[in-house]
Amino acid sequence: MAGGEVSDSCSTSGLTSNSGHVGLTDPQKSPEDENLKSPASQDTQDLKSVLVTSVLNLEKLDVDLYRGTHHWVPRTQRLFGGQIIGQALVAAAKSVSDNFYVHSLHCYFVRAGDPKVPVLYQVDRTRDGRSFTVRSVKAIQHGQPILICQASFQKLQSSPLEHQFTMPSVPPPEDLLTTEELIHFHLSKPDLAENAKKGLNKLLANEVPIEIKPINPASFYRFAPSEPRRLFWGRARGHIGEGNTKLHCCVAAYVSDFALLGTAMLPYPKYRAEFSASLDHAMWFHNTFRSDEWMLYECESSWAGSSRGLVQARIWRRDGVLAASCSQEGVLRVKPVPEASKL
Ligand SMILES: CCC(=O)SCCNC(=O)CCNC(=O)[C@H](O)C(C)(C)COP(=O)(O)OP(=O)(O)OC[C@H]1O[C@@H](n2cnc3c(N)ncnc32)[C@H](O)[C@@H]1OP(=O)(O)O
Image 1 (tube, rainbow, N blue to C red):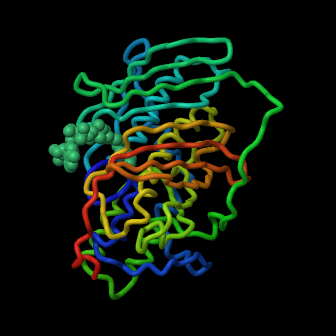
Image 2: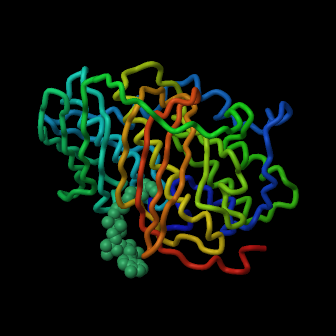
């Protein structure tokens, strides 16, 4: 995602000063909040995820050559980075045997993706080893690479060396509101400014195949400076089921690019990103998980400078198992928020 007023693809900016400050009071969910639920969030968890039926369902054109189409396109009208990574990983996995599991991927976004044409994925079978197998994938549009990705797969190999950090203690997803429910909450306020209403309704019209529940909505939406750290529950919208392990990694790769980069903007509510785009993205998969079940994203930005921000994320299963780790650097070209829009 690039350009525009948002700091990442989470499209949360409708709640920020751009559309007018809507005075978030950090609502927590209670039984009477049920009527805040949008119809979409009530029933779509029963439907098959569009990520599986469409976005990650690549068309085979030739040996190691696939075509992917788009589902949700950010309003920047550049392709969503998570979609390109997810599709690249699907293409890579197609030539890898079932007993090898993806353990890492490293990608560079070298050009903006064009939503008007499909993306071709060309796979190079870099190496097939006894324990590890490596694939390189080039995502191509208009004859030029838009993403280069390397993915590595490993056979299951047990080891006496096993450790992980401890998952932070946070409220369960059932006690929190989705971003759509938070928007409905603000839309129900009688004193909401017209421009804020417009911005929020635009956000609701987005058909993002991801659900997010911020742990602390006030810091998520950047109303006051905060440390560059945020936590949220996230999952693919719709049902995927047990499926295969690789497919869940492809879906997680899609989801993981959605709300990372904005973490680097949290200390700077007086600035908005007039241009933001992820430059590179790396993931390491540690344990099996279901990408259609709530996972805790613990994101922190260790550094920002030189018009770039670096963000790391740990992605937890709700039973406390560390499922994956992720790192991303993005370009962040900012400008001050105009005084008037803070009213
Ligand atoms: C958050 C999750 C996401 O999904 S992000 C989506 C995935 N990532 C991407 O699409 C990024 C793809 N990569 C790219 O677009 C390029 O590699 C980027 C990052 C833009 C490389 O930047 P750069 O070398 O500056 O490209 P460019 O010369 O084509 O310029 C692009 C636009 O930026 C502007 N620009 C350039 N330099 C500056 C500067 N120093 N200060 C201010 N603006 C600058 C250029 O004028 C150009 O703007 P415009 O597009 O013409 O409006």
